[in-house]
Structures are given as C-alpha cells and as structure tokens.
Length: 175
Image 1 (cartoon, rainbow, N blue to C red):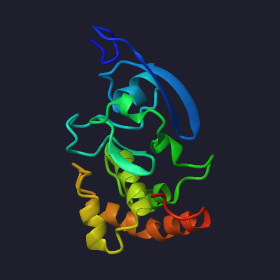
Image 2 (tube, rainbow, N blue to C red):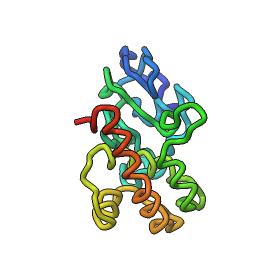
Image 3 (cartoon, helix red, strand yellow):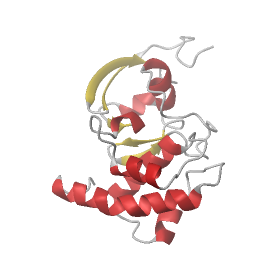
C-alpha cells in the first residue's frame, strides 16, 4: 500500500514553494515530506535511507533550515519554502557546493550526496561552522556509509566562503 493511498481521513490542501515554484497540492495527513517529494512530485534526488531520521539521506531545506524529510509530515510544511537538491543549481550553473563535491571527489556511491549537500547549504546559512571541527560536528547527522567524510569536509570547507559571499550579496543569511 502506498503512503498516499486513502484508508481513512481526507486529503488536506497544501500550499508551498518547492525549488522556487509555487505549488498547491492535496495530501493525506500521514504523508511525509519525503514521500510527497519522491512519490507525488517526482523529485527523486532526496533519498530514503533509514526512514527514522538517523542517516540524513533525506535532508532538505525548509525555510533555509535543515530538516529530515522522512520525519516531517507534509502538512507541517504549509506555506513553507522548500529547497531540494534539484533546486540548488541555477540553470546550468552548479551550486558552489555541488562543484566542490566534484572537485574533492566527496562521494563514492553518491546515495548520501543530496542530503550531505543540502545539509551543508543549511550549515552555511546558519553561519555556525567556521572550523573543520565545527563543520564535522554540524554535519554529524549525515552519514556516509562509504566513508568519504574527509572529502566531504574538504568540499564544505572550500565552498563555505563562496556561499557566505553569495549570501552577503543577496542580503545575508536567512534567520
């Protein structure tokens, strides 16, 4: 049975912005944000890992803050601005963090990469990670089963100044 098939209850209206596009949807109260993104909107870059909020593969940005989409009910996002891995690039130009991941070979199998990148973008917006140790701590909710952590940290270190400079040009980090 699909997470979106009716058993009981009614679908609820949901308005949100996903990757810059306003959307009006109907969702059942038990639909997770992860299932909404993957099953209803075909945004399959966000991955289902543990489905318990422990691995970070499903990390997306809600109003600039990192959230585990597997633990977030879609109805909780009414009016939210969501960004997934698909929404980070601007046209053909990759996000600085996407470029840094390529430069530093910060992925092996690539399964955790979308969540790692979205988490690092949120980390930059939070403005709290200024050292390698702080980056490691703030990214600790995103697991990489391949063990590419040193490359991931190097990519984040390289991209943070670029992301901060871009945020300053656009009016500073979101609160």
